Length: 221
View 1 (cartoon, rainbow, N blue to C red):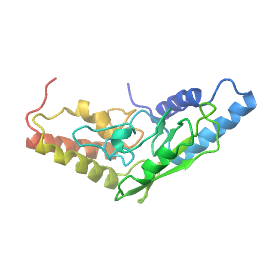
View 2: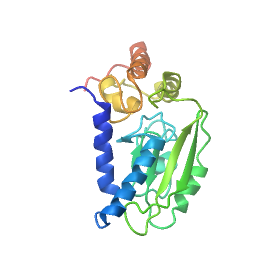
View 3: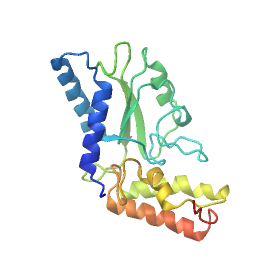
View 4: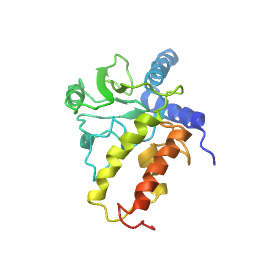
């Protein structure tokens, strides 16, 4: 089945809306929270299921154990009840969320993006939590469709994948690597992060590395 970005984005929004907006609220209150959620989507992009491993929000990880979801192994502390968007994630820890804010401030600088965090005065998820929006603010322009352009995505992918030759003994097939390099949800040729042109460039670069033999023989299963 062809990948339909709009359908994937709408499905993700409906899922997150059910998760973050309590059913115990009145219809008016739920409507206000839905508007607030739509505002977040407008700022940081559609709901996603996982990041490319090279995305600045998760790239601060051990290269031998790539991450596609923000967690302690990416440098964050105190996350709870987290949902992810293309260029940001919303986490709703109990308490004041200071651990989250402090951990974001402690992240190493990124050459092409700034990671920021702010508390939101919006009653998402449940009473007693403090919603915090962590954002990836790119220092270079995105595409017209607000996707990550090829001049950003390709070198960021290469920076993460090239060092693997030092310890790899087998090369992974493209079908295995696709969610790690394109993000999720994705199709055969694009994702919510990158368009077809960029996805093809990423695929060509990865397959060129595989064909060079730098990772070792190709895994067949």
